[in-house]
Amino acid sequence: MKHWRNIDRSVVAVVLMLATTVCTAQATGKLRLNMEPAGQTEYVLDGQYRLRDREVTLLEGQHRFVFWAPERRMLDTVLTVVAGGTSDVRISLRYSEEYIQWRKRSERYESQRRWGLYAPPVVAAGAAAWMVVSYMNYSQAHRELEDLNDAYAASTDPGEIGRIKTEEIPAAKDDFAKARTQTIIASSVFVVSAGATWYLRRKLSSRTPPLFEDKERTRFEGLVWVPSGNGGTWMAGLSIPLAR
Image (cartoon, rainbow, N blue to C red; front, side, top):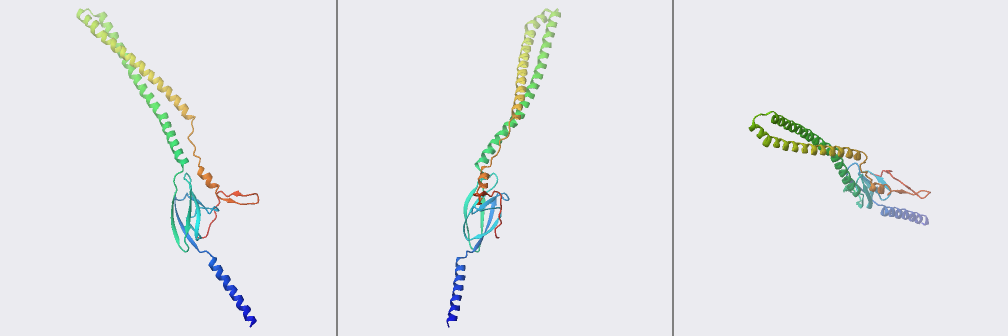
């Protein structure tokens, strides 16, 4: 009888141990992550694992996720795993402030570069054409004035002499003065625009485009830490597969 009592106690102990194990064991669930931008988003799970997996099987309950993608702002959030089920989660990361400011600086740089490279040469070419036309008008006005002077000296008709002296020569002198002034202005504009073209090209050639510093990436790289005998090391770039 004592022997059977010992067996009964052993069975009860085993049953209690199994019951305790079943009660304390946690079930698992699955998370299906729809991440944007697709193919670039990574995340750190529970401060330990750096992953890219779109589906992960985890113990039920809450788990901390920190999502990141190049040029995007980190998203630190908590997701809840439901036992025995699959939960779809959509993650969309916004552009980081550093990236937005870099884009603005880059657009200004490109705009200034385009205007600096193309606008002055166009102005210089227009000024050169204006200078050539003005000089041709100046030369023609000069020839017309000389022809009138020759006609005045060679004419013997008093009426023609009077007309040339009082009407045609003064008008020709006025046209000659205007053509000369226009030629001077056009030449000055050409010289200034040509000098501006040379100066801007030289200045733009020494400028460098703005650089993008992804500070969010630096922060994300430092999230996973592995203890060691010397205190610990940062586990940047390490991926650990989990059960699926």
